Amino acid sequence: MPHRNKAVTKDVQDKLTPLMVLQDFIEGNSRFIRDEVHTIDHKALITQTTDGQHPKAIVLSCIDSRVPVELIFDQTIGDVFVARVAGNFENVDILGSMEYSCKVAGSKLIFVLGHESCGAIKAACDHVELGNITSMLDNIQPAVKKSETQVKGKHNSSNTEFVNHTIENNVRLTIDRIREKSPILKEMEDNGEIKIVGGVYHISSGKVAML
Picture: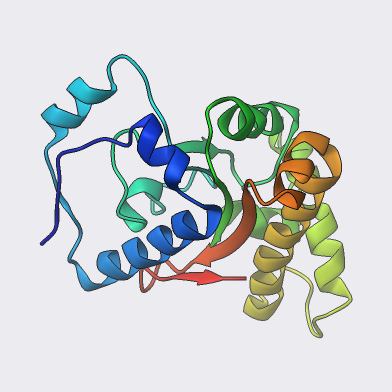
């Protein structure tokens, strides 16, 4: 198995392109599926990152415990920023975090990661109302509404096709809104400084399917 004992430095980060980082993620996920992930010298990486960090990417993920972001992409200490919220949608705080990651800290990739069997997506499909969960799920309703125009049958969580379409639509619409709501990130993407991509993690296989 490959071994990691060196953290990402500023020099290494500067030499990376957005496409290189994306390819690194894809290859890391392949290693994860094959159960051939890096062995990690955590003590060495902790020491090397104590005074600073130079992550390659920021991932927007769901809070789901079955989606351990660093593990499924075979990343480790100092490699990635991770923003997590149930349903993996953007808001002003996450957008600000992304702008910090890319514009200030030098990350080259924004990856919006949905996942199979997402409880937040299912709840949005069922129009669940409960405390603060209600307003949280409002962020996913645009994806639900789009799926209603694409999928026949019941428009609730009992329809797996409907749920799966909503998971994918939520990722795509989140990417659209990132570009729309953050002129900083859109300009960086237009200039080729970063890439904004999305995918869906399949908890049944460990595979990340790109969208």
